[in-house]
Length: 312
Ligand SMILES: *Cc1c(COP(=O)(O)O)cnc(C)c1O
Image (cartoon, rainbow, N blue to C red; front, top):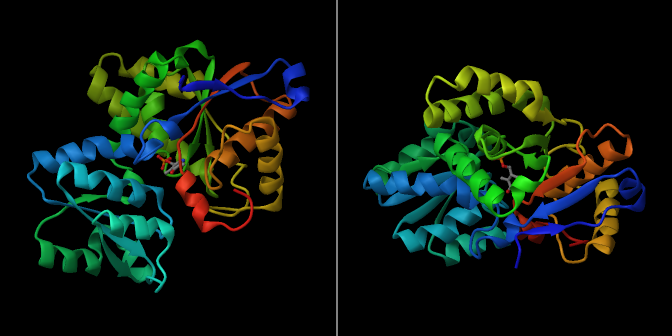
């Protein structure tokens, strides 16, 4: 199987000369598909290097990140602990059921305490019981997470991704986008946030990308490299959040139904990748999209469909 597959676009976009393919990140890893394994890779390595037995993290009840963490930890002999946003419902979500089945431990937290993150009371309670843990921030979005996505860009390029003018990726925190952007293996990068206020990610993505480029390339080339992130390599489209995080509008649903008719072999996830492909096609339709040959990076998330009723 090739990791890169052509997508069929609506005829009007084909007539405009646009091409779109998809990098099947959703098929890369059986237990932890998409970007989350890449974000956890160096976190798990660091945890092991520090001699930690427990990796703890944060997430919502449908979190792709917690799902991947729970799936990966047993193979490394690590105990996974999840601090879950909000109270735990008596009937766990499918995501959290998988987490527990794989040996992970769940800790509910009030929304207020959850927001305190590393300063939360629940963190102190967990460390009292389990000793010092290796903590991964929500979404796996720290420097180690960005570095994993920096590596991912190279493998995407080597699997045929270097043939394209432009890559497209969805964003939550922007850590994945930053890793891809920092890599010399990515061509230009279009980033489409799934949350409101996505314009604010621009500075974060650039700062993270510069940090990683500096770590990898040394200070010398940084100035030129950093300004190139701004000047032509990176574009952000903040208007396709569709009402906000995890909002699934009738418009998005209709788009997905049309997409599925044209591309029955590819599923997009409702929270991230669907919004990115929708946004990309809207921009093409409006003749604002500057790149002819495009590669959408599928960041996974299909397990999240289990939180939705209706189309999947
Ligand atoms: C977590 C996630 C993202 C967002 O990744 P960031 O690094 O936070 O920008 C995108 N797509 C899917 C499917 C995800 O699960």
